[in-house]
Each structure stands twice: as structure tokens, then as C-alpha cells.
Length: 328
Ligand code: PBG
Image 1 (spheres, helix red, strand yellow):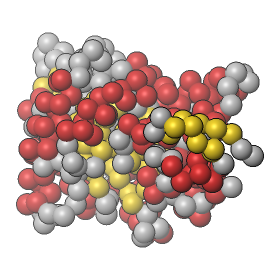
Image 2 (cartoon, rainbow, N blue to C red):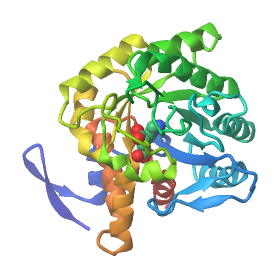
Image 3 (spheres, rainbow, N blue to C red):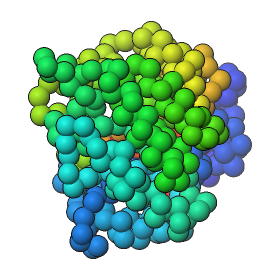
Image 4 (cartoon, rainbow, N blue to C red):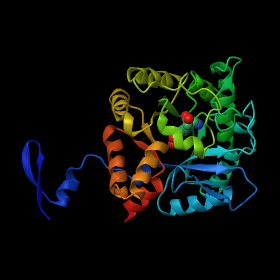
């Protein structure tokens, strides 16, 4: 099996072994974070397929445990949890209740899989009756400052339950500082924050909002999420979050924003995560189901490209599949 390729301007004989020796980027099992949706329900066997995300489910605690057990046996090291509460209200009270579904899920998983890195998404949109990420004012505007307190309470309740890291995804200004101070005051000085620092107002979140039942009832998220046209703004957002105490920066979505990821990689020496979001997942799934693309090759190419662009961490709904393919 010989073929040739260019390397440093010279044509080399490329055996598979030599190609592996000179390969620059590779996805490792330890790079992957698998997101899960956990629902507050009395039905222990609850496992509801998400129509717009084939292969993904909303789980009861018990079903989540089963799913995670299989993934951990395959080498999964990290999960990112999203909660679906029974009750949503104006104040998003289930987001920061110590008995909330995410808090329960964290305790449940850490109890059974102490080595597993459990990360929680910190946002209010799954918990507010109107589906917004923050408190809403009289004119329908998202109120930045009144939201910070609730986000900090949410993060603290997750960490108290045993979360290894919190990931604020709300995009309110000043939330990293608010969360950092609250965690520090409570003695959790070494619990890291992975900031969704660079989060665009993206149509690629469509399937997620079905999955998490978090579509805003009115308005949109343009007041706090970023304009897809901007990359310099991304650097300012990243810098602000680092100043406030973020430990890991995230760029989201993944594929359409690889240039932004690269800009951050070149500029900052902190770890960087990318979120290969729901819409990116569903597009590949839909095309693969139609026989239009090779799913495994497409997904592995995506993973390699995230690494090449500079990601340390890849959050993806394909994580379980990728582990399976890497193990083969
Ligand atoms: C907000 C949040 C969203 C996603 C992760 N956290 C949705 C949004 O901002 O509307 C999207 C993830 C995805 O599309 O996979 N809590």
C-alpha cells in the first residue's frame, strides 16, 4: 500500500505508517465531551427520542445512568448536562433549586462514576416560562444585571451537588465574575469555569431548542448572543471573560466558526473548547440517513478539523459514536 504525497515541497513515499508519523492533528477520546438531556419525570424508564436529532434522547435519571455506563465503558471521560424541569416559572426557580433535575443528575452520576468529569450548562432558558436566558423587563427586553445573581446561584447549586466544572451559556455581561466570586465565597476556589465566551446567535441551535424545550416564546437572543458577521468582537468577548476569571474559552457553533477558533487559539494560551452544535449534528445525520454521505468519515473529518483549528476540547453529540470508531 504505497502512494505519494507532498511534504516540505518534496514528494514522499507515503505508507500508512509514514502518514501516521507526520499527521499533525488527531482527536483523542479524552478530548470529547458528550451532552445529555435529563428530564424530571416519575417514569423511571423514560427515554424519549428527540425527533430532530436522530440517535439522541431525553432521559430519566435511571436511563441516563444506563447510557452513561455504556459510554464510560467505551472510554467516555466527560459529560455536559442539560435539564428539563417539570415546572417552568418567571424566576426560573428550578435552575437553582438544590433538588432541581440537574442537581439530582450530578449527584446521581458522581455517586456512580466518581472519575467522570461532570460539567453543567448554566443558563435559565430551560427553566423560564418564556424560554429566555434571563429575566425579562416590561418592554420584553432581557435584563442583564438582575439575571447575574440567578446565574451565580445556579452555578453554585451545581457545584454543591458535585459538578466538576460549570459552563455558563447565557452570554450575559459580567456573569463570569459573578459566578467566580460566588464560587470563591463558598469555598469552591478551584472549580473551573468553562465560558461559552464566543457564542453566536445561530440558526444551528434549532434542533437543540426542541430537545431542551427552550425556544423563546417571543423575541430572540440577538441582544446577548453575537452577530455571525463579527470576529473582532469575539476577541473582545474572550478577553473580557478571561479577565473575569474564565478558565476555558468556548467557541460555538463549531464548523462555521473555525476561523474564529483559530483566531482565539493564536491569541490566547488558555484551553479552548468548541461546541459542535445540534444543527451540525442533525445535518450530518439527515444526509447519512439518505445515503448521501458516509457518516463515519464525515464525522471523523469534522473532529480532525476541530483539532487542526486549535480546539483542545470538542463537545459533540457524536462523542459516543466517535469513541466506538476509535476503539475499532
Ligand atoms: C442555552 C444553550 C443553547 C445551546 C447550548 N446551551 C441554546 C441557545 O442558546 O439557544 C445550544 C446547543 C446546541 O444547539 O446543540 N442554554
